[in-house]
Length: 68
Image (cartoon, rainbow, N blue to C red; front, side, top):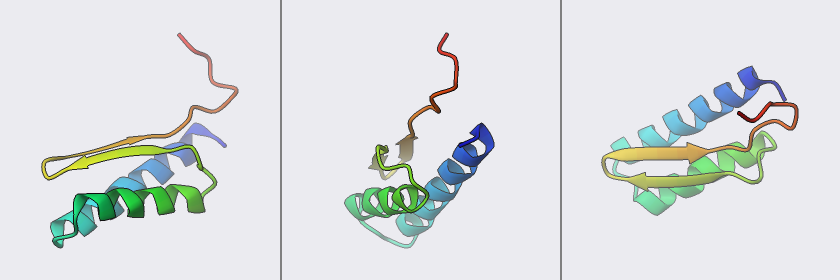
């Protein structure tokens, strides 16, 4: 997948999580929802951490990406 696709999936998952959190969802539900969004686009090894004041998401780098 291209970097653009990864960025769009990450943005969608974070925005979805933000909406759930703003509507009163519990933090573990937000993490679960973000995990489901990422899994739906094929990113099965994703990690998220959510608090009331922050949302963090980690997606794997593409294999072709150089590591610096």
